[in-house]
Image (cartoon, rainbow, N blue to C red; front, side, top):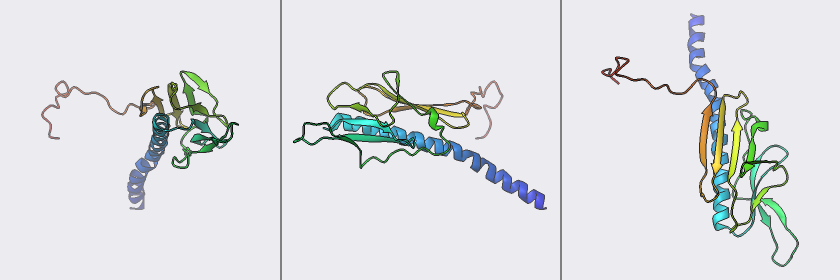
Length: 175
């Protein structure tokens, strides 16, 4: 009796635990997409130079150049107070988070991928994958787009398999 109860509990818990990796990865990818969306919005409608930067902990953040109009010297890059940094969960392999501009890989730790509003923006791409290498996603922001496009790839088993219901004799099944 105890064995049956444990088997039932395991059957309920295992799918939920294995789904956490996917959910955490998807949440992180959505946060990166939101960050790129704000990067595009600040570029299109803002007045200050903006940038994407990673800190030493691997967080991805939107930064603005704080320029004092009365001082001709360059300002300091400050985190945008309205856009929270992306703190990647343990499910994301930090070494796989790669930012490219116009196809060129960039090291943006401490030095941002910056852009001044009104100038041509590069094509920005962020690639990331899970620690177990099962999930991968690429988030693209085209030069004149106001929103990024996310494309996912699962390296494990495919999510869906096309089935010809007529050929399989299943066209008249109740759904």
